[in-house]
Length: 288
Image (cartoon, rainbow, N blue to C red; front, side, top):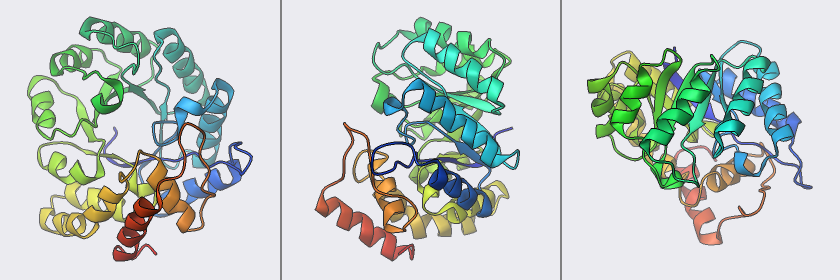
């Protein structure tokens, strides 16, 4: 269902800090025109922690309208509170999204049984669920055993692996029948060699055609060509994380003239040195 390259899209802001829906829809067109298979709004890259609930749902609504069925929409509707995650997911389902990305509750640090009950409650809503394992942001890893338990639920369809461990792909596939998506551009190809079926990408905000080509080439089994693409752009992939995501990717899009470089506190601009590192990577990759 979720095979391919999906973009964890940024949320652009106007200079007054409000959501810039005009440029947001332009970004979505840029993605679709360049072969991306899905849009993932209001995830980490979309600065979801600083959007209020009304903005959160409005961004999802605008995504569904702009996409108009041409690619998948996998809406970020996770939360620390299970009740809030259920509410956001229910509302996103009513808006017509194709699936939901559910991050591990990232402050209250539930145990594995709590994680199982949390994700199961969301899955009971009836929308396909992509589990989001990102221990670097949540202080909790979804244990492979818990993933296997959740995989028995008919609506838990995939897991986004963003823990930096390629071996998690085989460990997961050895114990359950679940689609695995890489959550790290630099590890997408290694993970696909081990059985992952795509990526939820940050770099594709900037180079959607490159990421789509890399993933599609790997899915076709043309590993040598995929490796060449990976090797050519891996420095750019790494540069997207020279500072906290989504600071570098928004800076990159601003350099390209696609958005204004505006963040919501506590996120702010990166240092001059980091921005120069990013700029050099973009020049090297012929993005600038």
